[in-house]
Length: 536
Image (cartoon, rainbow, N blue to C red; front, side, top):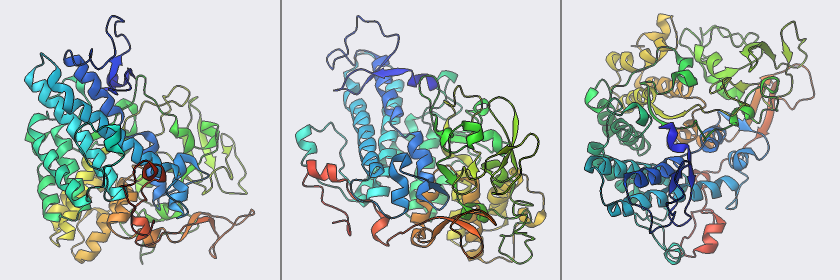
């Protein structure tokens, strides 16, 4: 599937694509297109290319309390997180335009595929189903950020685009659910695709996305039902947990059976974003996307207790000892080791006043928070340009959605715990029974809190937290406070009363900031769009 990105866009009207080895005898015009199945596949490849981007994937993390971006990187996400943005914000504009470009590309496929004179019926159904999935995914992103948005499934003209109004979020969600249900029969499972088509949208992806959207709408019985279609159900695909958590994020282990949907890279499509989140002694640039102290603090101890709980054993002077193993596998902290692109092991020293020892590198002050992300670091990349796929939905997320559905409906029990939370913690290499066995004395509210914390630890730096804090309606709580970094005893830092670095103070206005404003540019072009409440 990675080869679908070895393409170039050749028609502004069509937004279609041609392989680089396309003979010059074929004209790239609307009239000359749609002559065979390869034309349809090339146009579909363009849809895949616009499904998401590394800038959205990584930048979304800084829209939550998990991460901080210094400056205006990632299209100004720090301005959004800090509550100091408006209708002209770069990320707001980019999100709107990016998603509607994807929708147009998908509409091109669904509208024109009947023009192909000869095409295998099963292939035709599959191409249309894949395009409909990407269109549904794009609309899901739009309604999450903006609420009501323009809605259409045909190829509208420029004049129509300047007059179309917004359709209600509820109506669009109803459409999305209908689409994702109808296309399932036309999509192969993850085991039915040929090797050359690995990474394409599957029946399991349609089911998992449905579960995720039902989770956002709070329809917990429906979430449970959808997840159960993937829990050991080979009719919809064969999925499971990769044995070793860090292996999930390596090029050598792509296309594993935990990935349900991912953002495809490789070949001609690469990204150098890792230079924004790795230590400068590794990437040779100062990191701008870094973890927060709040994320670090939320990782539990190896005995299953939160660091603030009595009996946790947490030592503020030795804060990374006896913690959830995923902390060290996700985040680089003071005294962490890291193998750089030259194969050398560095000991990263982020604490001011440290004295670099042999085989160690002084990295003090390079990260605004004193932390870096380790996840998705690809030291096999050439000049830091990685082709590592980025997971949009994986089986672990299905387990967590299922666990949350059971906890939200107050029916979480030992069997559910063992299938979900215990399975994830065993995979993470917890060994203390206090962390892995079902806490029978816990209330349903406490079990829900455990599930939420588990979700944060398991999926950290995968762009889900920004959506979670909004659907849980806790954004106003977790974003209305300072962004903290490591605890320091020396250096000219702005600190709180416990000595933790204060990087910035954020602001989130409830309910205003739960939706983004319709971009000024779009409203200038179309007077019928209106504006979200409190953004007038």
